[in-house]
View 1 (cartoon, rainbow, N blue to C red):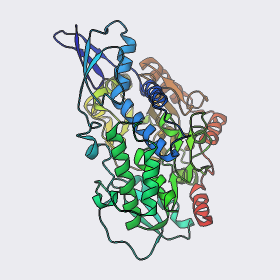
View 2: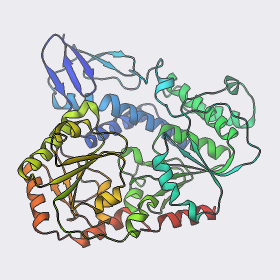
View 3: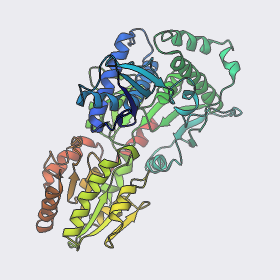
View 4: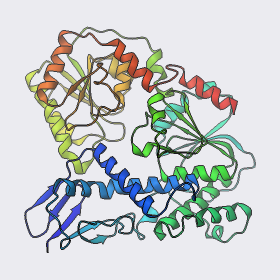
Length: 489
């Protein structure tokens, strides 16, 4: 018998020097996770015929998140190393065994944040329904944000000038608090909650049933203390937003999800709200799959945060070897991917020292590998809080990584675009497939793309038009359209 230990993106054979790494990309892991969700739901008879749609969405999104974080990497390793396990072997891993048990080997499952001990206060951080006195007057629109709300506020600023409704902008609270008496109070809406929750009892682990029940009553308490006619949120692909939509519908509150980005991927095929306002055609396709669950209306209305990218006049500057590099959000346990990308960029700096490189970090996190590898060159500068439109306009060429949504802004501003595709990531946005951008899967392709743009800055404007039309509606007037939409409710 052999013992293995699974941790993050590797599988370690104990008492030996053998270590197996997960080399799959995010797209592969999402496909694995979605398959596991389907298996679990089928085995436990979880479907829309017997369960409220919003609650089923909550369960599926939870499972998807769990499988993506804990299961998909292990399954990817096992798939690439089919001969390393057998029924007599044992894997020690973190997780919740009742959610999914491996069939390839026996398991010892250690507690994780999804287990009964740690789940309640770790999974749904950002969800807090503390005690507040009820307001005497209803808020017309309650706009919810998370964290500092920087992204949400910037989007909402593009809408406020076009809506006649009054609104309150409020942080979605940080801790989950509930009056335990809520579970014993008898009224009509609580009886409806109990009837709906009975549908899932016994079909999912008790801890998951308990947390969903807690979320339902917490959401009701939150809405009772913050009465409003309309609630606008910016994230539909999370379990707590599915529950919030369910409770809003019970309390006759209109729930709207306002997209903050183009929606792709398996976690963006469920829509629990009354209205889901999306960037455009490509996003809407995510919700038209056979297995999609949609509770309300899908509206292709545009991207208010991109309106100014259309309205600000174009800037034409002479070529000066100014390159803007937009690294993606870096995950620590997969730092080897970042090292690969940064080494590719480093080679370009070494061969072409005349390049002036600006690295604009992802707004949420500084890329440590970019600083470590590229920071030693004098022609490299780093920026975190900078206006993306101005940065794009002040550079000759922009390099993005994989599926970065920032390529859309670059395309709108008619700037040359290179997509680093090392390691491989599908061209979800069609930057290179359309013929607008150039792909670089290794250094030589990056070098050649740079030289081609340097020698000829011609762009395929027909391809640009196709990309923009596919992803965005009401270009330059999305804020106005959303304002009119809100006025009509």
